[in-house]
Amino acid sequence: MDRGRYGCVREDAADDDAVITAMRARELGRKSVVVGDRVALVGDTTAAPGALARIVRIAERTSVLRRTADDDDTTPEGRLERVVVANADQLVIVSALADPPPRTGFIDRCLVAAYDADIEPLLCLTKADLAGPAQVLDYYAELDLPYVLVAPDSDLTDLRERLADRISVLVGHSGVGKSTLVNRLVPDAERAVGRVSAIGKGRHTSTSAVALRLPRVQRKGDPGWIVDTPGIRSFGLAHVSAESLLHGFPDLIEGTLQDQPNCGHTAADIGCTLDAWVAAGKADPRRLASYRRLLASRAGEGDPREQPADEQAGA
Ligand SMILES: Nc1nc2c(ncn2[C@@H]2O[C@H](COP(=O)(O)OP(=O)(O)OP(=O)(O)O)[C@@H](O)[C@H]2O)c(=O)[nH]1
Ligand SMILES: [Mg+2]
Ligand SMILES: [Zn+2]
Image (cartoon, rainbow, N blue to C red; front, side):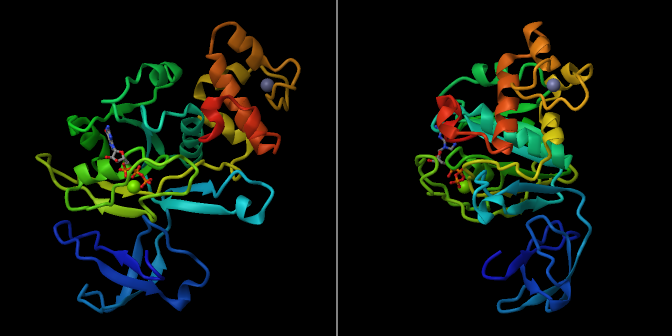
């Protein structure tokens, strides 16, 4: 989208991705159009220079990935909820193994958002040429979390297969290599690639989300769609209920089944069965700590300065 103009492509014309420029029709009312939406167009749909179509209808969304703009509960903008992308089937959580370093607190937030929106997560660990994945993978050992490793010269066949037949959205901090990866997957994409800047400094190479059709490579059938998004500093979850937060921690859920009714599962909840669960070695204490940090940040108790260095900028 650019200044009220939306780029649309025909879903039925797999080999013709001429971009039809369209604007919202008045009858849409206040409904917003987001990346991934399936829309009905009227007017000049020729994709000729200067042609302008109108979006008259938005199809019901099969999924809605949301995030709260920031975890800043103190301002109205901080609590503003945004739709990141509509109709995504898969959330590709892109994390560099170094430069910038991986932040499991951020990945955990993305997992919560994915499970909450009923979108399958895929962990994509980039810059595998700079560091190994052992630490990150160890942290997620108890989850059936699919992952792929990406290095500059790595083979992308496995990733392409995981992207086929579906709409996948890439999310991650700025500089982790989302656009670099999109350019490898879609050679015509020409997504701008930037240098890594300090997280939180507000330098983002990609400034808007774009959906791209993946090219047919050997494989028959629909290669799928990929949505590149601008880097985000945090994945705000103020829109997710405390109850739903637990869905991002499937390794902890069983530990709550015998819990006292209405337990809040925080460190202050005396007798929370999660403590015994972790003490018995049934789950990783770091996972419980991460879950409780999320609970605390939702309750507005989170003081970023009190969190371990690993979590400061990203989680
Ligand atoms: N060593 C190494 N560098 C990489 C790799 N992938 C990307 N980079 C570099 O990382 C930097 C940032 O890459 P981008 O693709 O712009 O990152 P991005 O995630 O799209 O960043 P935003 O658009 O700001 O969100 C560039 O200098 C890339 O060349 C990789 O696998 N290994
Ligand atoms: Mg980018
Ligand atoms: Zn509890």
